[in-house]
Length: 234
Image 1: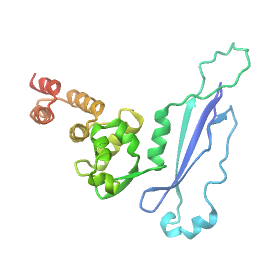
Image 2: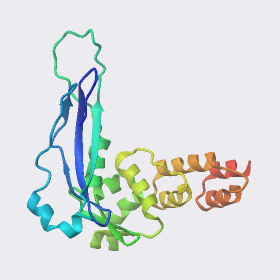
Image 3: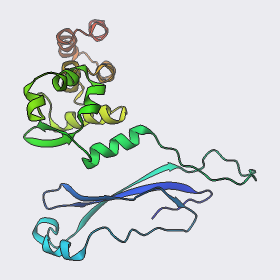
Image 4: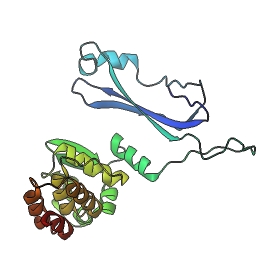
């Protein structure tokens, strides 16, 4: 349920079932943005069939409980329109390409390559990787094992760091890098993700202390980051 106290709000939503392994499955999203007015509600009736739900009881119903996750994305609530405006018109919601690319990643839509991290497979898009990273681009342009198998094995990142990297690749939004900036910096350097390298350095500089200065200095030297090295030595 979403309501707007003073002006219309445009929003879309997604549903998932959390299975017995704690993994999101059976995702479903609204086909378009809906305009919510005060005290007005929308109902999504065709999420999942009851017969399918009951047939998958051991996999979906853990301890006879159905766990759902819902994500609501509000595009814009006021649209920059003053209350004095009297000219009629259609209010068009604003959204960015990053939102749409993020959905492709979150829902594994139209994927064409597989990434293997910590023994788990994640499906992604070669075109987006090639656009963001010269290293990935070279993998898919030349006659490499990765190109033939359509699979890239990433051994130098844990799942949390990998998801932070993927979030930036798809949405260009800065991830939360605290407590893992050093590991993500190594991956960003390896795959040529310059913007992510800068973000990692910024976090490391902010967390710089007497206790970790030597560690950060070694990192800066390994990855040829002279600005980070200067900060660690000062």
